[in-house]
Image (cartoon, rainbow, N blue to C red; front, side, top):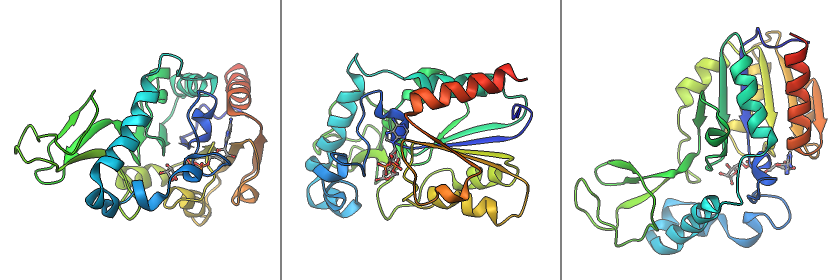
Length: 240
Ligand code: APR
């Protein structure tokens, strides 16, 4: 089936970056096995011990800058799918890494923020950064100390770009979920939102295993994303 003349919405999660060498969250040995969410991923944690939180993200960023970490074939194929799509295309990622951009994706929204930026909680000034963040950092704009934090959405905070996302979902004809456990809302609820519209929408899921939402999809591609996604994209492009 050629989906290139349909409006395509892609949702990605940590699983797509796993084969690039970045840990997922909820799998065995994933980040939440080694850290407590409430110690690193909440505003309360930041207020209590800012440098513990800063260092958690400094470590994630350092890892991403390792020359061995690069986009894998799943990221590359999604950029190819976007380039071949003749209608509207949107890639929404829950990931805070920059592997989709490095693979060439253009129409992308990081709904959980990214490791690229920091912002000041006092004056909202935001900037791209390339250094180890510490609680001694002085905001370039308001000169306050210790108010600058990573621009990542923590638990209890509102994900970014929800207006844009839901407005795209209104006209989505193909929904593809890749490498997410579909545990964290609102992203996990996008499929329910689409199903309740009653519209004719195609649903595909790519994961190494079934998830608690798998039964809602028309087709489940089980296997590593770096294999299943390129195979799928190549078939779609050949069939056009
Ligand atoms: N190919 C495809 N899927 C994979 C692969 C792979 N190579 N490796 C792992 N997966 C799947 C796992 O089976 C799992 O379902 O990726 C999923 C990763 O799930 P999570 O660790 O829960 O990550 P994610 O769904 O992105 O988490 C959502 O939770 O803690 C927060 O903010 C964090 O953005 C994150 C959000």
